[in-house]
Image (cartoon, rainbow, N blue to C red; front, side, top):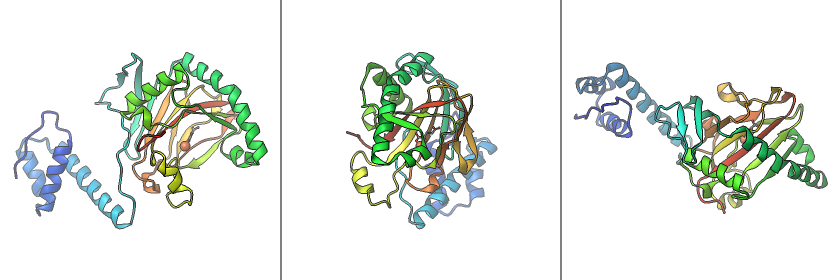
Length: 289
Ligand SMILES: O=C(O)CCC(=O)C(=O)O
Ligand SMILES: [Fe+2]
């Protein structure tokens, strides 16, 4: 067994690969650990890398055995341990919280107050129209259970939308072309978005035609355009996580399989007082034209 010591002592893809090779060659976890320690790895760091790699490997194997879809690449911010990030447009944001399973990252300052207000002003007149259409088609009941009103912008529709879409793309390392048009949702008092998955259920009859255009959804960025007086958190029931809706903040989450094992179940909790405005960007696997 040979192993290069890395100066940063983190579980790099090369290290994970090496650990798996040792395990597959029949070396016991303890022998692998000893080899790592002898190569200069701190024992605790080595143990953690070993645990993560082997448990990840076993989860993959049992998932494949259960007939789950294979994981696909997903958007991912490059944080490199930084709490503050300067994006290419000069905009500075901060990392408030991150969770690894499911992958959830909360950012502050993603949109400026002026950008939030401008987005709401642009969307507001069109929300009303979308409500009328829902009433005419009889779809309003379903929509009311999810949210009071919504609308989509076309990609790059205005200069502001374009700036925001480029910022999202730079943060998440995912092409602008893979993004759906920005959606704005308005929740009045009592409105909510019941827990749901953003990916399309592959078992639904409509899935093949939806997936033909850009493939699956693999990531979501929800941007808060105001701070509701009370309620309206974005909740992840599987991990009992609640993200507070704060004007300008954004929550990113990804799901590498269109399956509940992604634990990406989430919803918008009822607005208890005041109102709530969000903009949502969904990322697809491929170009969404
Ligand atoms: O309003 C929220 O907090 C969640 C929105 C959401 O789940 C979505 O737009 O898909
Ligand atoms: Fe959602």
